Amino acid sequence: MHATTPLSSIILVLFGSFIGSFGAVFLKVGAEHMKGSLARLITNHWLALGVVLYLLSSVFYMMGVAQGQLTVLYPMVSLGYIWTILWARLFFKEPFTMAKIGGLVMIIFGVALINLGNA
Amino acid sequence: MLYTGRDDVNRLTSPTTTVIETTPQTQGGMLRSFLLVFACTIIGALAQLFLKQGTAQLGARATHVSLLQVVKDPTLIWAYCMGILTNFKLFCGYCMYGIVTFLMALALKGRELSRLFPIIALTYVWVTILSLFVLGEHMNFFRSAGIAFIVGGVSVLGLKK
Picture (spheres, each protein chain N blue to C red):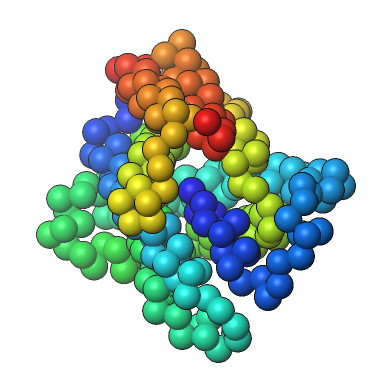
C-alpha cells in the first residue's frame, strides 16, 4: 500500500470541488428565491441547478478517489473553500476578512504539505 | 461550504422577527446544534469510506479515469451515476450524504454557522483515521502536518474578524 496517488486523481478531485463551489452559489441564489410553499421549492430552477452541480461534482470526486489514497485525496476537497469564498465576494458581496484570508493560506499550505507527503 | 447562506435565508424567510429571535441562542439549543454537527462529521467520514470502497468495485474501465478521458467520453459520468444505484456501498455512501445534509439543515436552522466550522473540520481527522485503520493507508510527517494545517485553516474561516 505504498503506492503514490496519481496526479490524474488529484486533478479530478480538484475539478470536482471547483464544480461543487458553483453548486453552492446556485443553492444560495435558490435559497434567496425560496419563499413560501413546497411547490415553489420543487420548481425552483436555481435550487435544482445547485443540486445537479453538487451531484456532478461528487461524480468527479468519486472518479478521483477510485484510484489513490484517501489520506491524500480527501484533504484536497478543502481547496474548494477558495472558490466558494471568491464567488461569495464576487456574487454576494461578502467581504474578505482576515479570518478568511488566514484560513485560506493555512489550507493552501496544508494541501502543499500533503502533496509533499505524497511523493 | 454548503450552508454558508443558511443564516441569511432563515432571516429572510421568517415571517416576523421578534426581539426574542434576535437574542443569542439558548445554551441547550447550541449544544443540540454542536452534537448534530458532530454526528454529521462522523457520518460524513463513514460516507467517504463507503464511496472509496464502492468505486474500487466499479471495474477497470471506471476506476482508471482521467479528466481528459471524461471530456472525450462523457458517458463515463453516466456510468458512475448508474454505479450509485447499482453498487451497494456507493448507494449507502450517497444515502449518508443525504442524511448529513438533512441533519446539517436541522442543526443550522436559525443558527450561526461560523461557530461550527471547527467541528465541521473534524471530518478531515475522522477520514484520516478511517483511511489508516480500515483502508490500511500509511501516514507520514508531511501528510499529518498538512491535515493539521487544513483543520486549523477551516476552523478559523468562520471567525468574525
